[in-house]
Amino acid sequence: MNNPLVTPDPGLFIWTILTFLVLLALLAKFAWKPLLAALDQRQQMIAQAVEDAKKAREEIERVRQESAQVLNKARVDAEAIVTRAQSDASAFNEEMRQKAIADGQAIVQRAEKQIELEKNRAIKDIRRERRTLARVYTLIGEKSKAEKQAN
Image 1 (cartoon, rainbow, N blue to C red):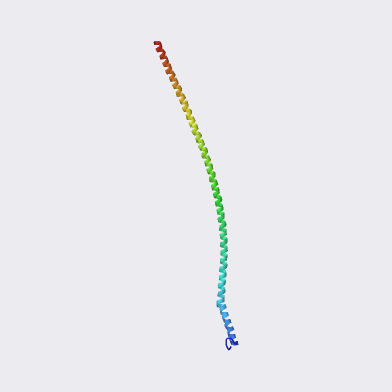
Image 2: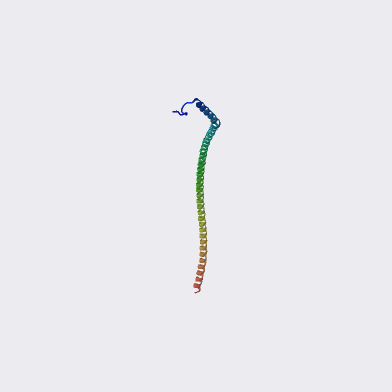
């Protein structure tokens, strides 16, 4: 076991510690600080991303609630419109039914008036015809009497 790497040598020991310290100082100055800065920046980016995600989640929840409110309001409005339309249709239907009844009654009244006029005209015609026939019968009767007396 005559290996110089395995046997303790105080000079090598000092040089090794000195090299380690120089390397540690160089790494601390040139590598460690930028590494820590990069890690710190990465940590800040992650924290910002988490905060942005939380804000986005809150915004999504707010928008969802607003959309639910808008949807509920739209449902209420739609129901009101349907109710109003049904009410208007019912009122229009009733109005048309009343108008049809009134029109039917007016037609019946006109027809009854027309029938009454035709009846009165027919009665007048019959009376005139009766008078005319009575005159004709009277003339025929007088002529017949005159012929009987002349015979």
